[in-house]
Amino acid sequence: MSPTDNPWRIPEELSGKHIFVTGASGFMGKVLLEKLLRSCPEVGCIYLLMRPKRGVSVAERLRDILNTPLFEPLLSEHPEAASKLRVVSGDCSELRLGLSAEDEDVLARNVSYVFHVAATVRFDDPLHDAIIINIRSTREVVELSKKMSKLKVLEYVSTTYAFTNESILEERHYEAHLDWRTVIGLAEKEDAHTLLSVTKKLLGFQPNAYTFTKALAENVINDARFDIPVIVFRPAVVVSSLEEPFPGWIDNLNGPFGMWAGAFKGILRCAFANEDVALSYTPVDWAIKGMIACAVARAINPQAVRRFDPQRLAVVNMSLDLVRYTYRTQHQWFVRKLELAVHPIRYPSIFMTRCFPYFWLTTMFTHVPYGVALDMLLQYAGQKPR
Image (tube, rainbow, N blue to C red; front, side, top):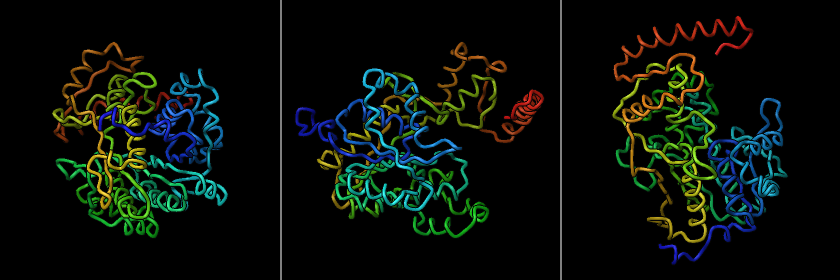
């Protein structure tokens, strides 16, 4: 469909609509809020599911989000934009999302668009936590969405790495190797220690709890496709912004950034990795624009979603694969950009190896002693060891 044939425009469609967002305090969630407020100024209201954290109220957490550099360009010109945001206290790890009956009723009566972005993205999270947050919360979002009288679409944000056994990931539904209901039942009945002991068996071909639970969450969405309008959006490894609201914005060390930040600081010297691997990346601003466009397309013009079939789950993959850089190429850039190292604790240097014994020995001799020494200094200075 060409732009001239486009019968709808996103700002007009979202004008006056109420939107519910989970994961608004996360990396992608923040960019989603900024983009909606900036590009769809007539949006009705954006409800944010948020929980109090470490004694900080949800209102204070929202203020902290709005005070990040991400929102400065928007709020400097349109400070009233923040009035579109309303926090509803809840928790993705609880049944019914921890919502009060009053808030649930407000959402059920008003919301037209749901963006389920919340997830734990740590690869080393205990399986119990990953199941509750990534799978059961998706079921709870689906159940809440079924009560929404004005619902036009529920969009679930997954990942292109949800089914790691597929050499080519097509834009279609895949069945996970376990049933999501059974897995949720295990997490609810068994303690975390028991689940830890059977984690490897449950994961099967999946490399970690993150990919395992994201695949099962997609199955939750697939089973709801005849009850409510749904779509799965799969970005690749989401990295810093390319253009909007300004280039290079990021607020985490996920993806490749953790490794290179550690190397530039002089902390990380050796990585167990294959230098010839090239991951797929998606700039966060591209991912968010794709998310919004796909949600609106699924809501009002399903045929705009590639290969849409009313009987099948609508799925969209998004990856910047025009140029894919291997870790070897990234390492060459690292060597040429050492001037970017800000206050390193030792001279920046890193190498990669596929030999695990060599990696283990190098870690024992270059990382552990240095870390122990630094922790002792921190303790001596009255600070918390890191």
